Image 1 (spheres, rainbow, N blue to C red):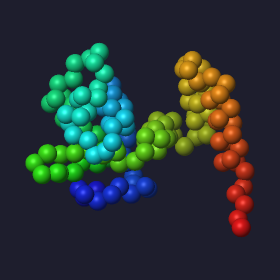
Image 2: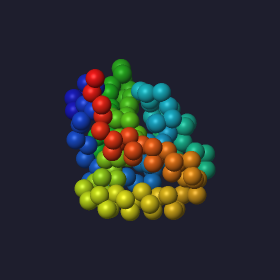
Image 3: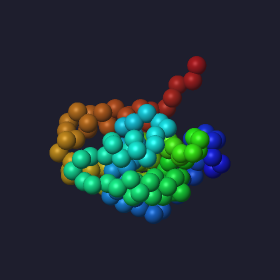
Image 4: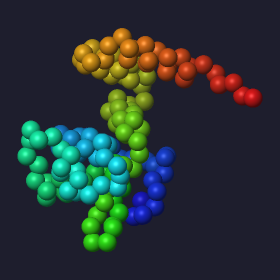
Length: 142
């Protein structure tokens, strides 16, 4: 993808290599900021529990850009970073690549997530049911 051009919503993002722990933390930080972001902004947004060196965050941002997860652009003498897609789209593509195209594997992942994360209660399950019904029901054309 050339620098400066907006990302295509259908861009084929290579997520075959998994995201490491720092990459996940950096993506969380980037998603909580207004893009485009600088390395310093990401460093400042990272949790204070860990120590994140500027150079390490810079390297991580560049790796995420090379993987197609972030878009990197030049603004004067500095680089700024923006998400190449919404975090929901990224998560969906990552899950699809991890489990393959098999529907039963997707079902297993969703069920595992619901079992493992106690924060996902009945409200989340009800929302999932509504979204599944919307997907399954044929759309009416006017």
